[in-house]
Image (cartoon, protein in one colour):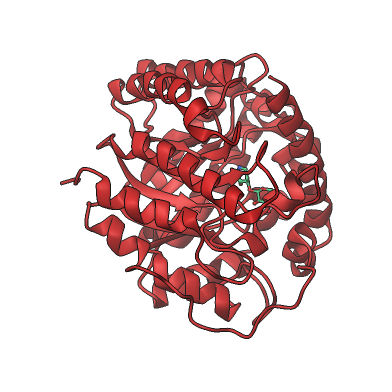
Length: 402
Ligand code: XIL
């Protein structure tokens, strides 16, 4: 449980940054969120890929590989499509992209009456120009700290259920209408389950509508009508590490409820923000794999598809030595991917950032020894790491999807 409370604390800290930058206007939002990298970017070069693209390795098994990406001004040192070395990684390895922050309410909807599509429009146009698919993240991040300040303090008036319904459905309809078939899969609801007690969070919006369950159902029904072509996903960070049992139970209960009530949810997005437990990865993963399979078995038995939506690894309890750390992270990743890839219900696999240089993890939870985090398949100089090989080998070993 200590891992969860620490994460919660850090999520609140990260939320304060996001909220602060959301209030500072669109032009400064992304810059405030990730902060500049400490060293200048190397001269853009093609990434050195030791094997074929990860997406072609995935495609050979009927799967897809992709990553998050950000918006920036051209050439800024960010994990952006407008930053040539980062774009080169996206174009070399990815078949599907997902905006990291730019489609969240705080960025897309600066007030109850205004939408600003400048950034996602540019990002989606880039993906289209490269023939890359796009996921939408997200239509509702169901926690007060991730809602924009205006939504939490909004006057829902004398008939709050009607105004709450209007605010939510207008949001979903407006986003889905703007992007139409350009977005084939949406995280309709993100992180609604409180891992502390497996309950559902409430927000000012959900209280207006009449409670979390009614709100989540409304979100999915609205998305189904507004984007009938799209895969509708419930996305959360319950994971396989010890301390996640409550969170997994809460997510299972939510998924069961969706089925009982006929709520149109197609898939569970498994964020996959992994955390290494010890240097000897083999010693920790066998129990984790067993617990994790029990969870996934129940999810797929209810008819849900699976996605890996936000893979990265926090290299906790590992030595600072880079070779040893990268090896342990790659082994841990491979053990996880092997379990996931065994499920034919899983076909899309996305990492939350291609290279360590721009990963959110460094700001979210730095290592206590001050060594820079190494959460991604490529390092801060855009060079492939053993984690990338782990992905390539896991795809090669995966059973083919039809
Ligand atoms: C993170 C972004 O990477 C950060 O830049 C931002 O400050 C906070 O959000 N789960 C999610 C993602 O669903 O949207 C989060 O992204 C990471 C955790």
